[in-house]
Amino acid sequence: MNKPIAITMGDAAGIGPEIIVKAFRDAPELTSGCFVVGDLATLRRAAQWIGAGGIALPVALIDTEAQALNMPPRCLPLLQVGRLSQPLPPGRLSAEAGRLAGDCVVWAAQAALRREVAALVTAPLHKEALALSGAPYADFPGHTEMLQSLAAAHTGKPLSQMPVRMMLANDELRVVLVSIHVALRDAIEAVTFDQVLQTLVIAHESLSAILGRAPKIAVAGINPHAGEGGLFGREEIDIIVPAIAAACTRGVLASGPFAPDTVFMRARAKGTQPGEFDVVLAMYHDQGLIPVKYLGVETGVNVTLGLPLVRTSPDHGTAFDIAGTGQADAASLIAAIRVARQLCAQQSIS
Image: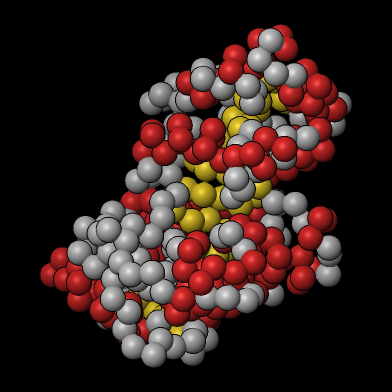
């Protein structure tokens, strides 16, 4: 790679700093050419907490992202963004941590949009801390919405013309969501013809680039048994089926809607045996994320589709209950870095 990958620190009181240190310690071949956007004292404290397993793991301050490309293995380059007034206690909600986490995302996203970094990997932030920090971050429920807003502003487009979708994936299952961080009542209202069709098109275009072919997309229904022919609701008949038909006229290989209690099992890959589908389109957040996380939260990766940049993240949160103990598992972050590298490589080929 001729450009580095930026990893944002996440909430300073969460497990983000610890899993970042573990990733640089345990996966030097993947983290080579990566750097962290965050706070120097916080990362150095995290290195002390985990003890680095007896391996020397210096945290080195860099002035520019390009310096990250010339660092030795198991050296953690950090670009300081903002500065905490004092080290924050682990596991404690604070507006200061929320603001710093937001500042790190903004810096890294803008660097990615300017093509100064190859990709963006985000460690977990705490949505309540983000809200406590006030404007401008209180307006964003999470990373996805913030990145969407930054990308729209950078390209000079209205937000409505920068549609993005969340994809959660592990070795067994991929899921793309119609709606993301909204209340369940609002998520049901978000199941419209336009939203479902747009999600199908985004999933098709993004996964075609990733797989090198058109993906087979299974569409989950929103009602039990996919509505049972209208007995349990008409959303499938009136909204989802017409959206699938419209997508198919555009070359999208979509089918359904299928009963949501079985479609994920049909799409699941088992060992070397691929699933019946490449991805499942889920109608709302928990419908899709519960099966993916049940199969292995430690290996899941969140990929934002539709952005003019590569962004991945682990599929877990800040885990305040174990922050500062050194127990946090870095596997999902390592997987996110691996996927970011793969997406960068595929983009360079295409």
